[in-house]
Image (cartoon, rainbow, N blue to C red):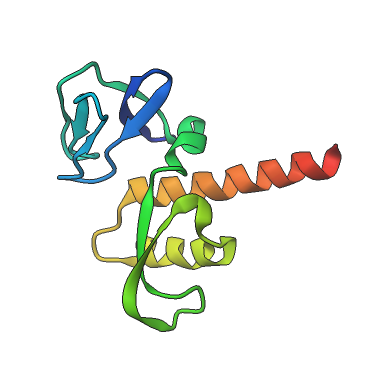
Length: 129
């Protein structure tokens, strides 16, 4: 399986990602990144790495806007949650919806799949120890 790359900028060991087109993100000191997977706009050095290898940082920044709850019931208002705060069952429902959409975001699918793998591996290590 090919693993997708994601671009980021880094300052003082903190990584900053742009997850979609026009997703402008900026450090307090002014360094920024924008463009997600569509293009790159930055005023500092842009680095890249595999999503699966950066998931610990990604999960702290990737916001998902839900219009349905984890049981596929429509919410009165959209709710935003960080990837790390989504329930595993909810992520498992999101992936096929993204995959079957008319314009699937392979990058988002990769982010969600990497999060599931991260959780699985973390849980496995806890049980082994």
